[in-house]
Structures are given as C-alpha cells and as structure tokens.
Length: 163
Ligand code: HEC
Image 1 (cartoon, protein in one colour):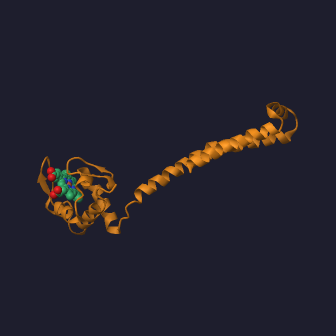
Image 2: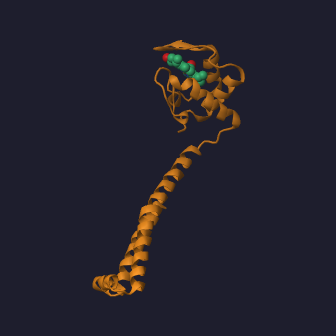
Image 3: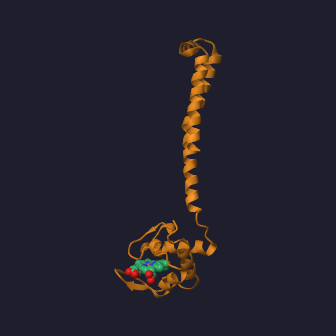
C-alpha cells in the first residue's frame, strides 16, 4: 500500500513534467513564467504544489498507516477473553519482573522463560499459589490468589510460546 502510493507519486511527477513539456518545454515554461500571461504560470505552480503535497504528506502518511496495519496484525493473532485480558494486566504488574513472555512484552530473566516452558494452566496456578524455590532464584508464594491467580494462569496458558 505504501509502495503503491510511492509509485503513484512518481507517476504524478512524470505527469507534471509531461505537462510542462507540452506547454512548450523548459524554455516555454520559462517564457510562460516570465511573461505576463498568468494562465500557464498558475497552472505550473498548481502542478508543482500538487506534486509536493503528494510527496510530502501522502507518502509519509501511507507509510505510517502501513506500519499501523502491521502492528495490529501482530496483536490480533491471539484473541483474549475478558479474564485473560485482566490476567495480562496483572502479569504486567508482577510476573514480568522475573519472567520472559513475549505476549506480555516481558523479558525478565530471574525465573523460567514461559514461552519455552509453555506451562498448562494448572502448573501456572500451582506456581502462583505455592511459589517456587529452585535453581538460581525464588518465586514467592501467593503473589496472587483467588480469581486474580486464575486469570493470570488462564492468560499465561493461552499465550505462552505463541508469539
Ligand atoms: C521474584 C521473581 C519472580 C516473580 C515476581 C514471579 N516468578 Fe515465577 N518463577 C520464579 C523463579 C525463580 C522460578 C523457578 C525457576 C526454576 O525452576 O529454577 C519461577 C517459576 C515459575 C513457573 C514454572 C513453575 C515450574 O514448576 O516449572 C511459572 C509457571 C511461573 N513461575 C509463573 C509466574 C507467574 C504467573 C508470576 C506472576 C504471578 C510469577 N511467576 C512471578 C521467579 C519469579
């Protein structure tokens, strides 16, 4: 889409050059510019303005719009339920300090990489409620309880290793 508009801009530039050439070539254009005849002069000015408008506004706008499309496509890959969405927020408040999970933009290195582990919901819930003391670090017990713990576990199980 961005590329298409970029090509379009060059086509327009070509048309503008053609337009100037047809109205008497560079010399004709120059004569028109310096003569008192306002018509061709104004037409040239309009053509130049249009070309600059397309190059200066439409092309960057198209590139930005194109990037936004890519972004949305990346995020829309996993549909989250309301609980999982809530779990994602809770995960961002606590768990991301220690764990890596791409879907939550988390890059912590203290605990297990959850994208690699791909834990089922029951394992995540167990880890949240009981904590973990193993390997190099410690995960405190009861970081979340009840529905909070459920939502976080639901979210992690749904997205781990999938982005
Ligand atoms: C203070 C750091 C820290 C925080 C905060 C933390 N964890 Fe952990 N987590 C760890 C460590 C350390 C381990 C154990 C790594 C090991 O096995 O050596 C672990 C292990 C895990 C495991 C794997 C359990 C297993 O049996 O393999 C899961 C799943 C997990 N954490 C989920 C979470 C979730 C969800 C949260 C947020 C509620 C969270 N962690 C918050 C440090 C943390």
